Image (cartoon, rainbow, N blue to C red; front, top):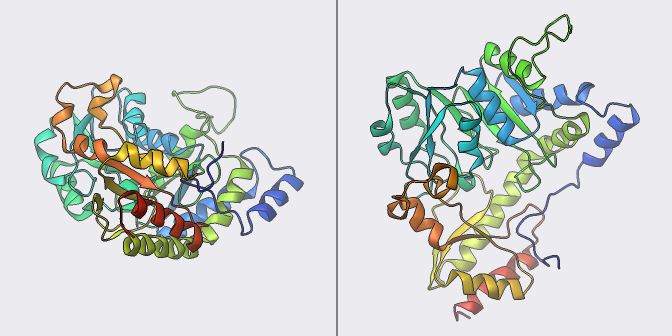
Length: 352
């Protein structure tokens, strides 16, 4: 049965339908046509970046970024313990090895712990702005310069945080701040890296298009229909971020004095409203019975079967994974619906 108040829902009440209809009407439904480049330019411009390379997913974006930087077998990439597994998978796809660093109390990679994990094989660091909360990029970039490391930002959950690394990667999945259904995009100021990523996403065709492919590449292209939706979303991004900021503030106000609930540090942009909850399973069952969907926090990468380390229970990331969840968070979440969520959380913990 569908949830009455889902954890996420896309907001598509701008020019998304008009743009998608236009590109279909003109016969541009593959990766050809003007909309892909229009989206790339618009999103790059909004973020103050020189180049955008649209692709098929956030995972594809990370993979393209790492490949463009020459990351491959024998290399190591520093990755947070607390993240979606796709961050680590992208490293593995290149043949490199992810090396995990625990999180701080803001859920982001603890920059103070990165240096001890750097080895002669380390080539890059992948900070992830978890749930829309910015990493300490000033300290991280200083460390990267000190050790001559490249920086691939995973901003899948953080549209609106300005890029700082060599390449910044975004997801456009349906539950993200802006969406194209499925999709992703990479931003960079380096024209060579932009060319490499565009080359790799399109099967590394030669200029002659003679079906001689000199490197292993991918079909990671974004369709024109997806790009049309993404462009419409980008045109609304300022308003979307402002609306979501108001949602964050309403949750802050409504849940600030609830015993048994720990509010997390403020977010730079709101992707999901994350909290720590005593009796988490019971709370989720209570909300579920009221038609309100919730989701659990990420599990540590060292708990994943493919990256298993027996020391995972001692991690800070494990402490947060044990009691964390996020509440319904989407642009079209109205005050009345949000108040129902707040009221049900408060009722579960016996607060009027």
